[in-house]
Image 1 (cartoon, rainbow, N blue to C red):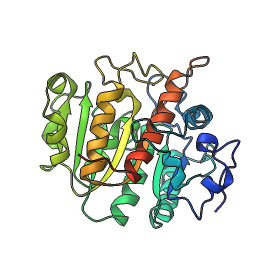
Image 2: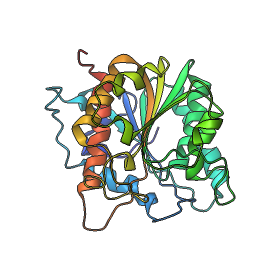
Image 3: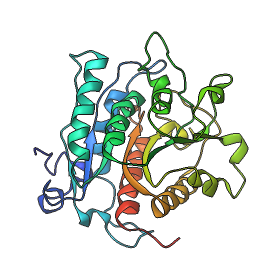
Image 4: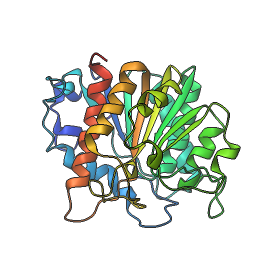
Length: 292
């Protein structure tokens, strides 16, 4: 399978660490934007993350090792600007079916949040007993928005039709959004859990054995992640986010993940770098579990 070379791939890895056949990890950049409703530019997110990743050190100080030694390959940036939104999502699902059939941990980089819909569809078909962990400022539970059920604001409404889910970090949504969700779904609002100590374990307890993580970067506070299309105050910070992710990877089998909604701001690389390092941390937690 064709992959990006060292000058373009995730982390700038040499061939021996980015060979597709040898790698245990896989980065799939998806430059898709069709339904964003506020600021535009998420299609530029994947390229910005890949570029910033070249500044991420291989050594992880928390794990005291180099997670990239497991091998991380990077696919070419996926883009279907000349096709309809539906056609692009269908093509993503077809490709995801192929990727998930292998034995690699796939981290997809968006792109707007609607890319999660076909990725979860493919994951549900591939993995038994699957649930979705959504880290997000927005519930994304509208059944339809701006005339489309495949809008980025409808992602979790579509997930709700496929499998159980747990949403964490919510700070914006629609009235009575919890009324139409499945009984095995859970919503954790940021204002109710920040400052408490037991919410992380409660959220994990709501997940099934196999977990797909969708990480909308507006989950994070705008003070550390301003480069998103729909920022919300009152978000989460770096170390508490890592603590939660580490616990999830320790206690559940994370089968795949995505990081979405980066909207690069020209001249501001901090958000791009954070997103790249977040992705690298996920690979580290996946392949090198720490003791609980």
